[in-house]
Image 1 (spheres, each protein chain N blue to C red):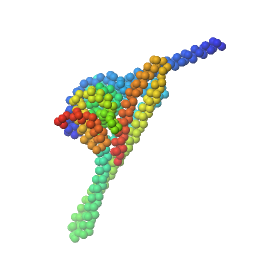
Image 2: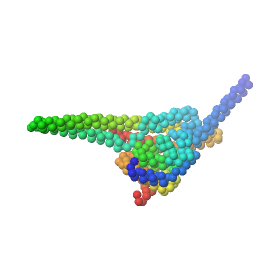
Image 3: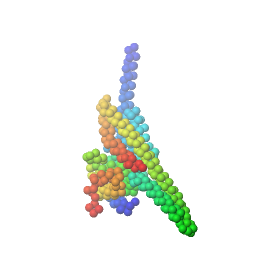
Image 4: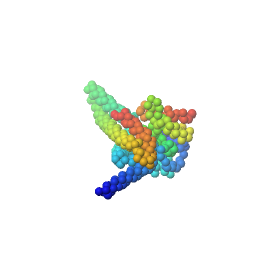
Length: 166
Length: 224
């Protein structure tokens, strides 16, 4: 891990305080195709994001496409942390970049504008800022690669939250 | 004769009502499963549900990494492995050139002392060439390992996407059927709930497939 990544992780911990997650209703809106929702809910129930079983959550990254927005916000730091620590090797990298990209014109892939707006609405400015910082760091790490372009595309939707002094 | 007819009609009516009760119960269970996020159990038709579950199980096998890698990491890993082979080969080539030069110097050497000194240098270079050859072999093995890994991931991701599509198609078939359910108001209401769930989950299916397709594209770019 690079030194500035350690600093970013500190920011991540500050922006996403450790609070117990309540799993109820996590998949109520979108159902849970391709996922054992009961098991996922059991895993997250009552735990803070720092206490979660990371390998399990990263393996079950499909959840990011069907979790309700408040629950995405609750587990998001686990996936962001993996992006910093595991980089391009993170099992969740594609699902996370897709989640953090707003679908746009010219076939820009990503989640719907409505869902993206709801996600931003669920997060605090500090959390949005740390997402932008993580995306920027990752984009630099894989610059020139297809993952780098995907990270840049996501960053476009978050860069307004980047801290001014960064 | 008349009594027999009555018995037959009654039996048929009872059979129909039992079959309907079963269907209603299937729909109630499916709605409950769909609300609880139990995937294929949210399909009330046993044939489609069963096909969905088979595909679902394959999804887990191929998408969760049980059958092998499903991500290739950075494309840089491949570039580094290829560069390492080239670099080691260049090193060996340079050593071979050095050896030729030394041998040519040796043939032109005026004294035995000079010849012996150059011979020692040639021995050393030969040892370096041998070690360099081992490094080339190792770098080639590493590149071959990377190639195997990437190809395995491509195979798994292809399968993962196929099985995901199969699950998605099962939900699409179920969606077509629930749209036409109107036997009673109660059944129609349950079918509407399921239809809404299936439609809401469609984006989830598509996003999951997109994420895997992106992973597949990276792996194809990372092929040595």
